[in-house]
Image (cartoon, rainbow, N blue to C red; front, side, top):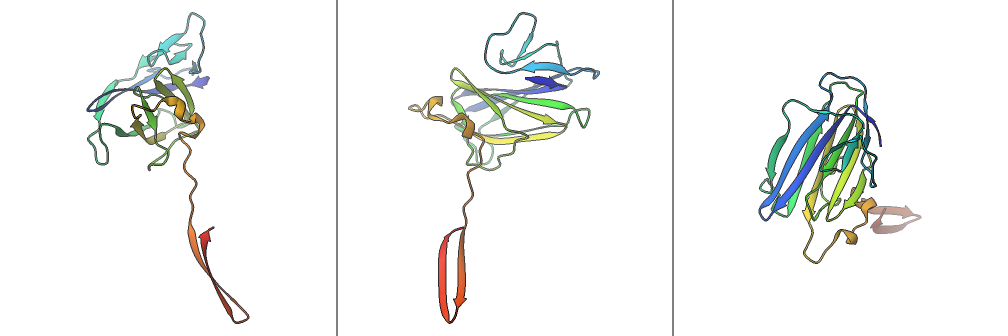
Length: 194
């Protein structure tokens, strides 16, 4: 939870042919004080305003910024298919130092793919299982990009098969180096991970 100037919200739905993403930006049309936002699990007291299908709450009633909501269909771009989708979102708030929430409600039975590039996030995410779907929340100050791939779970898989804290962790890079040592006339070659 925290105080933010606006919330960039992406909600996904899926069918057999792909994914529909609806992006809405909530904020004050004329600037002003930051609103207090909550995205963690649990019951909330009356008086809060609900966004993103009830997964994001605020102490302030926010307006939908002009030009939103925007809807796009994914699943037929290069490298994509109905079960593998690339998310590409970026936002430039009105003020360079404005705190922004990026809140994603992934389609049911979709998970991020940390082993695919690009994987660009403005911060470590807060990931919450909400039934058969995940909400993923990043925070940023000023302009930010969020780019990642997500895949549909196999029929035998469930969200319980995944470690939430590793869903946006880039795999460790390994490299193999060839080395050459000359030591008093003895030549040594070596291959291995460094």
